[in-house]
Image (cartoon, rainbow, N blue to C red; front, side, top):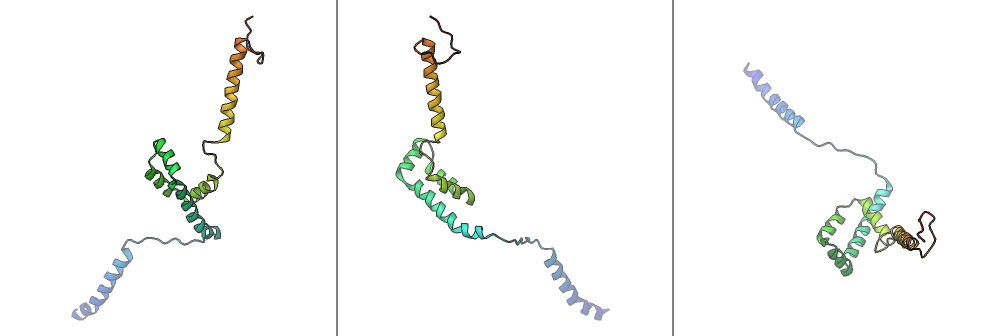
Length: 137
């Protein structure tokens, strides 16, 4: 019996260590293929972030943000939290976007203003543009 215990002691110690190694928590590693665009876009992402931060660093942009009640540090933090695809899209469109809004909004606003002016002048009897306005002669 003593001989069995002396032989079993190293084996039981090995099995105890082996069981601890097997049942310790571990994180799975996921390997997958990445596309060439991902590698190529890595440099483009850094350039896009730098370009957006450079625009944000301009004094006129900072004054415009502050005048609208936006904190410059919060805007910078939001830029840093954008995903890679979002920051690339923003940097690509930044030069194309007008400063005061979209051109569609300006066209719609101008059309509504012209319609209202013509409607008022038609109601007052100065013009005869709209057939649905009742004339009071």
